Image (cartoon, rainbow, N blue to C red; front, side):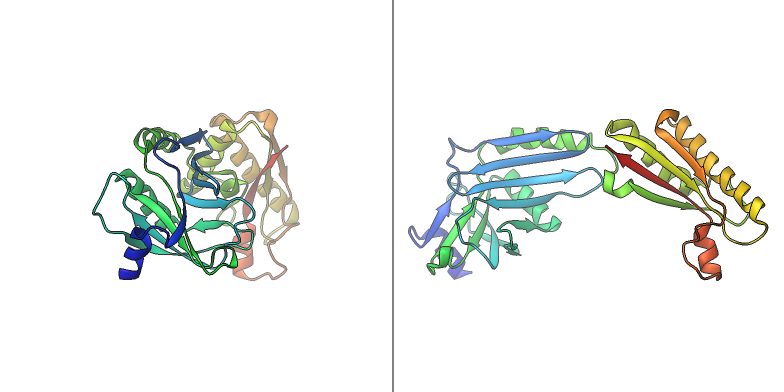
Length: 278
């Protein structure tokens, strides 16, 4: 800790990059799908908090080319210029990726936001800057952060409950000889409908009904049809346009595996929902 205190306090011990109070600007890009709050770090690059719908916040440090930074980096909470006498605090250790960025884990990212809210400066302390053996500090400025954070919090409150990756491929299961939708299936379809109704880039929703191989083939085909139609009907009731839905049914033709054991049969009694973008 004494070494860290010296690195933060002794002028000239480590090269530093940070926006001055006058330069400190926070920019928010807001939508129903993600909230991105970023700051330009003069002569170094950018730092960005990004929270996608259905996910937790992640911070990414994006250096410009030519800084030659790599390996392990200490993530600290330092005092702002208007907070004399406050000692630095270690948050954790992160790593430069092969493309030269730092992707900070969610827990550390949340601590960084809390630090900025308290007026502190989240700071990356790296060694061997550009193979010179010198240390370098890269910090986010807390100046002008509160109003930007208020807008960021409003954006997060308006995010959709899921993102495209989370619901682009979905399978809902059915008991043997049944086609009625369970409460858990309806809850999943609710999320799909919410997303599709907000994303115009989703042009087609493919709904495919399946059965296991027990019983007569024609009966299985009819059962898979009822299952697919039950899902389609529910999505339409939730506002998804019929013109965007393609409903198909396949009976027992496409089991999830070639085995005919109980687990395979349970997983084969399903309807898959696939979202297709442009």
